[in-house]
Length: 380
Image (cartoon, rainbow, N blue to C red; front, side, top):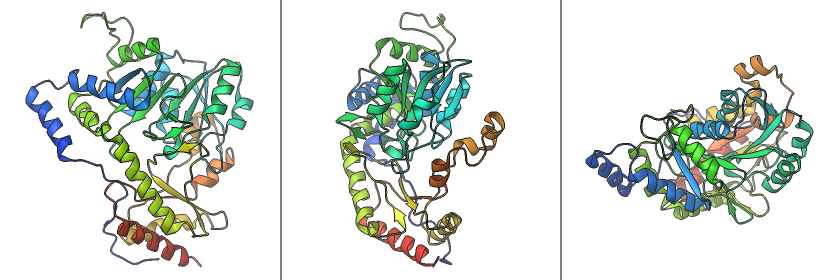
């Protein structure tokens, strides 16, 4: 293990901010219109076009977007929603927000998304929806999930927060299910600072989501008339301006991330103690993070030693994700114990997210690869 200073010289994530982004934000500041203005409309239209759907509603966060979708679809107390335990915790939290119950099923060992072979067995008379996550930007098995949802009369929801720009079978992530949520935190493909969005092809769902985001007003309401109990999940104009400019270079962003992923493949593809992220057949992931996994023969406890060693060398890294069902709040609420979802738990103990952002150079990827190999060799 390295005994370096630990000063981070190659960060895990860096937002892609350019002069055109700064000019757009400055334009908003000079306009005095800081909320519910033209930049929000521009961003929503551009996002809908990029995803290939009819409607988009920009929100203040990806978590807010998912909460609104569940509320708009009428998921409520007594309902069950089948979902994955391997995700950022917000995907399950939002189910609890509407007083429904998250029903976890295990994940695919290679793809890391919810395993559709296990979904059907988890369906009960209380099941209302399936909420699948495009983990790390890799599309879930949407064809199988769509078939299961149709066969059982269930609503299908896509958490695409990590998958802007990813495709499956020629369709963009965000276009599957009844509605999808995106998030635009600074480590995502594009950023609005904090921010998110709802996308859907269903006009009724889209308008209900827009109303719920805006304190329950609908398109015909006055500012003092509220037709339903809503929330304030609106995006602001500063964030929307940043998003509108960034979404305009999405194809460039996708290409750049593909290039960096290919560099990692070149650098680490022959390393026999890790598994690199791979695209599913017919898919083209736009990776949100670049996560490698230690092979099973590497003791799980060694993962944390590798992370510490990389950080000591100045390389940003982290584990992704901790199993949701083993988080203290979920263990108390739902009663899950270790071993409930063995694939998820095994994967979660072996993940290493490496630096992945637009500013990475080929030389930096080589440095990361050399450091990871050195840390692995130090375990022998």
